[in-house]
Amino acid sequence: MRVGAHESVAGGVFNAVESLVDDGGNCGQIFTHSPQVWQDPNIDEEEAERFRTLSDEHGVGPWVIHSSYLVNLCTPKDGLREKSLDSMQKEVDAASQLGIEYVNVHLGAHTGAGVEGGLENAGSVLDDLSIPDDVTVLVESDAGSGTKLGGDFEHLASVLDESTQDLDVCVDTAHAFAAGYDLSTPEAVDATVAAFDDVVGLDRLAYVHLNDSKHACGTNKDEHAHIGEGEIGVDGMRRIVTHPDLHEVPFVLETPNTSEKGFAWNIDRVRELAADD
Image 1: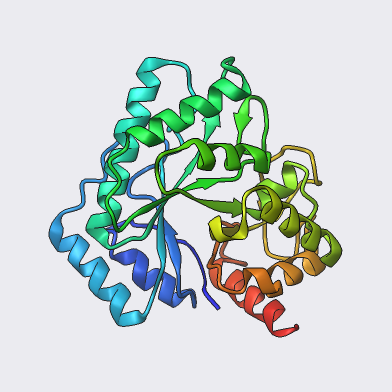
Image 2: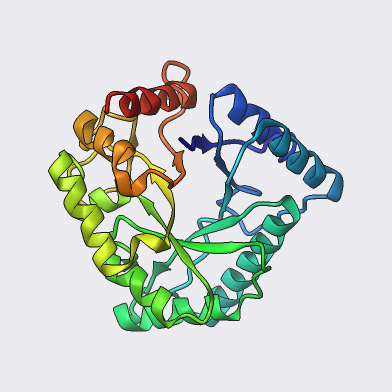
């Protein structure tokens, strides 16, 4: 089972590997810089080599880079489009430098362009990327608040179908739940997985952000909870981590990371639930 967490790169990107191993994980996610500002990764080759070497030594992977929160692929604004394109290009280049297989990105908000226009904008930005051969961009599912796109599986399928790039998908369980896809019972999980397969295709699901939700299904509220302690709950989480169609998909946690219940606690919880099957 591949399960890990979103680890800090404070002090050097290579420190994320040791932190992940300490937490008991064997796959993981990072930001290459603060996600709240426009900033370049700026990773030197010595750092990158240490990251690659440590990942190999510990058998950790696959890793995924999460793009900046400022990136908006759906925007109709030329200035923001260019900033988003530049930021994404630097992220996919950094991923190749680090030996990281995936870069994850939200579609963003159409801010008045409409659903169809926003999805076309997103596809246009993605098509303008020069993605290294050893990197795949993952389009992430969204909670769907306001004019944000990606809450409906159809949005993800549309971008994948229309883009000239070889893209895949990352489903966030808390986001999908907030967007109205029930995951709180085994039967609901089965139905949601089947719906994803019908609309997008399980062959395009490369990663799962495994998060419980502090809010009810369909509320469009994006706030994560500890595994089994939110509105998805133990039964739903157990079915997700034991679902036969998700057996080969890596899970990365973005759960609260507190002194009482951190990533290590949540990773252990996932493995306990998987062992219950």
